[in-house]
Image (cartoon, rainbow, N blue to C red):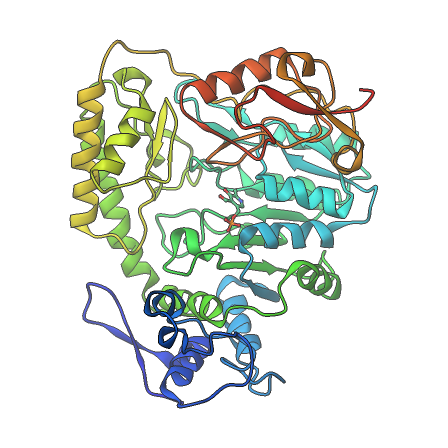
Length: 491
Ligand SMILES: Cc1ncc(COP(=O)(O)O)c(C=O)c1O
């Protein structure tokens, strides 16, 4: 095996690549002189056809015929997945190149059979919703609590799950999102206790928190809190390729073979080895240096939070504003209404200033700070953000909860039934009172306001139109301008 080393950015320490079998295989492949007669078709030589195209493809190595033989003789993927499973305390782990979208859908396919009831947070990402459509599961929605002071969603209250379990003892599983897109965390041990007492496994979409459990100042990860499965996007908070995701499970309440089939059902047969190697490398880095790297990043976010809080009217919630372990200290959420600034204008300034952020709507700006940031990058963000907010400040607005966390329509049909029902396109105003056929979600965060099977209400339509007018992108709807909506024929 090649004796490459992993260098930690901004640090003198290096780690042996032997702890990262896929990353080592990637490096070894790049060092070999081969003339592959396998896919991918670029064969590592696209630069000879078009240098620019070659640069895009630089680094792309397939799993089969790259990081391992086509017959998987070396077992590098299984080795890397086992190491990740061990790190997170999971008996089963798979690396996905289809993002947490694919991973969430795999869990839905593993959790029950068509027609089975499941208890699902209504703040679920659309990937879970479409997972329910694919699997034919029928959701009983769990409404999240909201914090009136900050407008943030607070997760699922223990009482909410207790009564859902009492009312639906036949439900097969509980699906949660922890943390929420805005960093808040439910009382997960209490929720897990309730679900397990009722014999239901708990499946947690932890897409935004691959770092949970790797520093004492952070909440423990979902498996450590007793959950049965965890999905996380390595590409969101760890240094990994876009689309890189992990799905990890304990197999006391979930069947390993079913999990495996469910995972394979939607995964490509030609996974990009580079994406897989980046998951492996990020895992090895987290295992070797996670605490130190997170220490540095937590200090950066804490410093940024303090500086931003000095801006008049700006609210920047932190872990001390919530119960212990109920907020991700790495999350920077800038709540603007008190300053009078408009988040969409602020975002424009941030883009112009070279510091684009993950999410901005009128009232909230969410920059993602990761292990790859340093003092310089975070200072630059805070400088530009502070200047933009001050320049845009004006009369304070009341704090409101964004529509995706608040009001909900009543479900008239199961998502799968509505997804496959005959639909028609009608003027949006005429859709009120009818059953929606499509997903409509302000993006980011991609949490649907309307889903197939839910009744369109005037209130939800108005809130969506307001978000659109404020400059938020309305995603997944056939008509993002919201002039028309797709509804079920005869509804
Ligand atoms: C809560 C949640 N789950 C899942 C996903 C999908 O993740 P990916 O982009 O890795 O497919 C997202 C994307 O933003 C998300 O916010």
